[in-house]
Each structure stands twice: as structure tokens, then as C-alpha cells.
Amino acid sequence: MINDIISDLLTRIRNSLKVYAPIVCVPITRLSFSILLILKTQKFINNFKIIKINGISIFLIDLKYIKNNTQSKILKLIRISKLSLRRYINYLKIKPSNLLFTPFNSLGFFIISTSKGIMTHTKAKTLKLGGEILFFIQ
Image 1 (cartoon, one colour):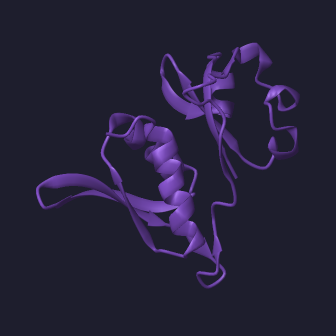
Image 2: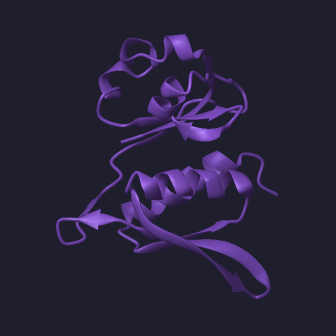
């Protein structure tokens, strides 16, 4: 049983990128589907699909590399809100100076869980939605 789905997903992706693995398998959840959809639309991963292995359905994620498969498209994956410490932000405070990691603010995206679903911080700002800051990706 996995307690923290987001941390598990990020750790599996991070570990696969360290060994230049072309694909990674993660358990299927609605939360991981939403996150993978954002990663695909922001072009951090190539694609993902559902496959069955021994009767168990999993996501198969096709990771994206640049420069002849020597550098990953994903440079940083940092978990912000954790099970032990939740971090929330109001939409009025979604500015570069207020997003906890000021050195990274203009180079990547914060993924925020809002009442309308999981989205990037820029989309949440335009829709005037605040929520829990899940992680940062660059």
C-alpha cells in the first residue's frame, strides 16, 4: 500500500531519469493520471499509456530526453506539500516572489491541486484559484 501517491510517482520518475531509462511504470490512480496529463501537455514526457501486466493495470510513461538521450527534459522534481506539512496558497499570492522557491520561479512550473482539479500555477492564477502546492518541476 502506497501512502503518498505523488511522492511515489515523482521518485519513480527521478530514479528512472538517473539511469536514463526510456520508460517507467507507475500504479494507476486518478491523481497520477491528472499529473501525467499535465506533464504531457507541458512536454516534460513524451506519452503515457495503460498496460496490463499479470492482470494488474499500470501506467507506462515514455520519458523525454534531449541531446542524444544524455540529458533529461526534466531537470528538477521537488515535492513541496507533504503528508507531514501541507502548503497552501491563495490565488492572490501566486506571484514569482511568493512561490516558496524564488530561484526556480520563472524556469519551471508549480503544480497546484485546486477545487477545479490539478493544474499549473499559471492556469490557477488566470482562473483565480488557490490550493495546495504539490510539487515543482523544471
